[in-house]
Length: 412
Image (cartoon, rainbow, N blue to C red):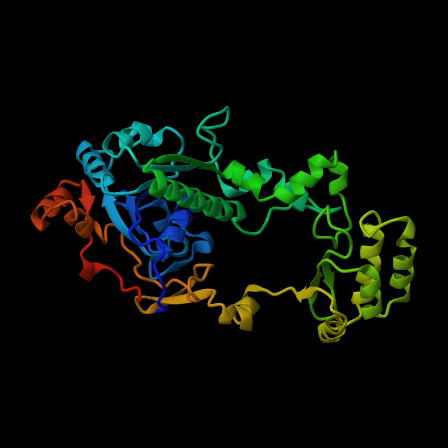
């Protein structure tokens, strides 16, 4: 494993999270060295039982694997009074309570902000919801695709002649997780300086809007209407000038970023494009973006990727080949950046996306992966002074699940 400084060593997080936004936020903190205890029901959190494309690695959900490394698992029934009391005892020794249930659920369980403050006045209590903890839609289900649609992202991603188009990954969830982790860290700095706790509130709705800060600022500040979203099918966004978009060559697709049209015309040796560029004295590469995109597409279409690459490199054109996931996995820069990590799950191998940052030149390693719900129950409860007999009795009564270490699947 790659060694690194655990920059959040000493920070303790009690996490009541499922699905992706909350777990991913906790994983960012855990990667940085925080002690994150995942509190889940004895049957296991939702993400242990579901995975996109039915992807399980030796019966372990890949969805679970993507957002829960470096956490310990405490499997406990908080709906039972004794389970709730154990959690309140634990909270006294933690810095953060993190949860992403619908608004009101933690209050009904007796584990809401005010409940925790009674036992831990300086707690950092971080909540993530779909639409916020108040307002007319606080109780509506919040999920990545629903928020993509609600925030205009699906509409803005579509191009002329196509139906509204969703982004092909859980982009709002992941951005929401980053914002949530950022908010917790800000509150932690405040507490270190002042001794005061903080109520941190995040929502997918706000994350979906923040994700589009540039586009929305341009749209509203420019007094635009929906007609501005219509554009040539090659263009990637409604607000960038040509050639910003995706184009097809003989043997590949490429993207062109911010490039001066005349310079691009020279690289492509296109007289038509050069003439159009020269005529922009009365227009701009933005107002004429559709016509320019059509000319650029025609100039690129008969060329191979190697020919384009050679010409673009020589001219200093900003471009990239469109890679698929198979190509990405073996991209030399991706390999160098250690973007992926392989871990053993029994005799199978799972590939995880590594922590995205480096600290003192190193990427955080994998310290722990609780592949079974309750794998760390005995250890966590031992920190409360509970002995093995007491934990065994709690398990017998269905209040906790304590998976023996010998029964847990090897992870690394």
